[in-house]
Image 1 (cartoon, rainbow, N blue to C red):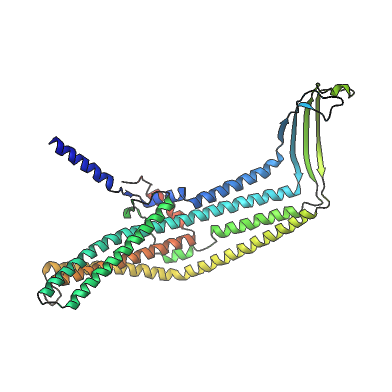
Image 2 (cartoon, rainbow, N blue to C red):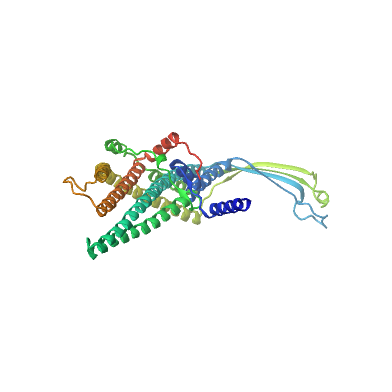
Length: 444
């Protein structure tokens, strides 16, 4: 008994080691992980940090810096070269500059552009994660449906073979049944490939290994399907991408303005220095009234009169600003064209939603009718007895209709998510979903 118990424990441990773990992740957790771990979001966040640091660097030019140094060395021979000091402190800060104010305004606009770009990237990643999650959820459901359909098709082939042996069917019927089974098998292979691709893509978005990721249909928030007019009304304004493009153009224009105001305008710099000179260099023997402690403070005023290289740089900045402005106009026009297409597609989306609902109701009604007929033993309303062959054929057809319902619902959800992003409602929809369904850890 002890040996048998040990053998059972070893077999159980081996089975647990071989069976892959499946982690079911909720919809809100998937969106949260994508926004947290996606490289595109992290890159955009780094751009925001860089733009903020650049702005602080330009502002800090008005804050005095302090630099310390020392020139200690052996005693000099003869007249001391230079002014060796035990230590010295120097400070410098910008007091006034016409161009610096333009550079600061340009840096502020660059920070706005980076922030808006981060918002656009977050919306794009959230849309990608949501659509991929829905696609994987559909794939897992279709795998179950196709598995059932494959069983019905194999059973149909066996029934037709028996009927052929009994002389009730022809070889054409058997070939047709086998063709149906082969087509379903091919559909299963394609569905497995689609599920693996969607699973891998979702894993890359979340920063997790692709093995064992599963969805939870109950955590998917509802989408507005019955108010197309309200959705159309929200299609106003612009997108974060358009606003970011114009902010970037504004930053480049401010920089160009600062470059053009460089010549013939004064720049005032505050400078200060303290040095304690050394005596081992015999400096006191050559200078009258030598003292070790020395300090100086003053203001340096610079007026650039001629700088050919800087004039060329100003022209370069003007061209760069013009390029950014034209590019922003192009992005704006593309957005407006896309928004117009969406506005005209709202009615079609509403009809597709209605068709998907009616198809689902029709498929359910056909299934209910089929169940009643199978339970009563009637193949049709005339009272003809249904054969096992008719039963399997009807079940295959019902599963095919259910697959069409799954595809129609997914296409509707995908279009609605894209519509919400274009109308600016995607972020609020995700925020509402996060509040309604707080993120929970994955369930193994």
